Length: 184
Figure (cartoon, rainbow, N blue to C red):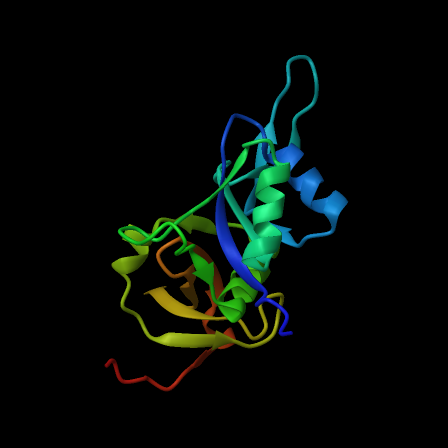
């Protein structure tokens, strides 16, 4: 019997501040997950300011596994986790993310490069730049699109199609142009 296909799937966390419980559940069971985080400066009353990691979008959550495995995780989550389906499709048409696309996005997010920012799919659709691959540094091998070109720096965008994108500023010398592919 063939093993079920393992892939990244987009899910939604329901309820305020349930992301910690969901991450703990996935850790306890040993299922891979990813939640895009950002560094935020917090200034509690009468205490010194500190930088903490908080979810970029508190409801966005990616799980890695088969549909059956992730269904089990959803049932264990007490209703705090739900599937996200493709718009206008059947209920069994989950948003599945290409493994290489997800690995590049995770590498970019986890680099925590100063000045990077998340952008929506609508903003990302405006950029029709050239595809490039970064060489060297924390983002070695990551492929994306040139969003804006400045004199010595480039605004480089890594995107999960129709879900989320991240824009990072890199040195122009680190970018290698990829051959253009024909659009069918």
